[in-house]
Image (cartoon, rainbow, N blue to C red; front, side, top):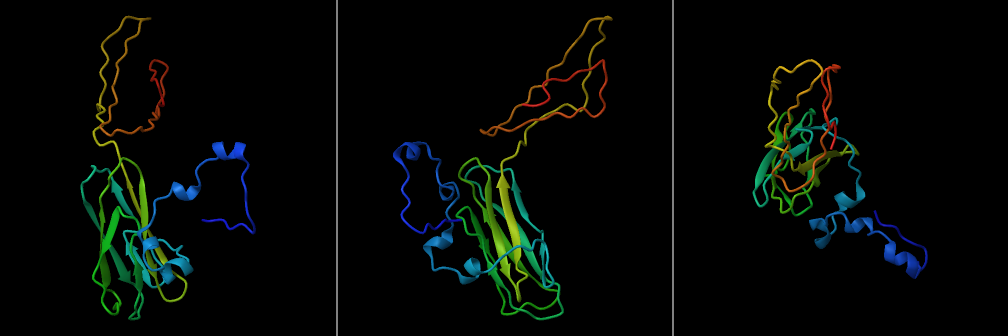
Length: 207
């Protein structure tokens, strides 16, 4: 979101040094800014998720959970005509460079049939990615299909059972379980004790 000021806005020099970066510098540039402005993208509101009275999205959102840098990933998205009318919809594909949307659009969509979209994702850094597919329908019930991509811990090994040896009364014994992650980013960890017991303790519970 951009703010428009009614007149010149001058920031004093002492405040300018410590001012955080504008929000638009922290958000990824979309491909559409370099092209001709999209009237449907800029003038319409897209708030419906999963389904409206005309179109149903399966799945309601796309998740690319876990990835390797430079590797391509592909997921399918179906837009199903759940109405009783033959219709024509406008599909606004993903806008950022890390997601590419392809589909073959027919002239009109018959009831019960669907468009199948292919969304390709190719990451170039370890972080969270977001985009969306928008569907402009008749009226104002426009659909929004969020697209998420994020790294996950896929090599975490926790033993299903922990065996502790016999210990004399009044003494204690402990067992350490190392938590390692191959992704070069930080993850938060929290442990929930489902059934506490005074003879057992677990630490740390978060980190």
